[in-house]
Length: 126
Image (cartoon, rainbow, N blue to C red):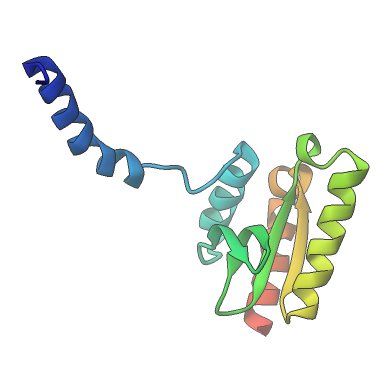
């Protein structure tokens, strides 16, 4: 028979679990966080983040416009395998009718106005 403290702990865990699930990050990196802030500051509609499109996952997208954004931070894109995987993903998505934009850390942080203008133009054209 479980002790009172075990039952209480289980009860607390069951009550907290849904709250914790709802608080999961919508992003997986600081660069993705900065990208969402860029969108908010420049009036770009908030994209869905970390979305699976077929066998691939994209960092951000506007499904109704079939526009996807990949954010290329150096840490995750510095070897040949990652380089090739990203090219294959972009080609597959474009063949499926998606328009794929790629932005670096500098695009998001230092060239935010140009980056937002590029996204805005593509969304308006979609």
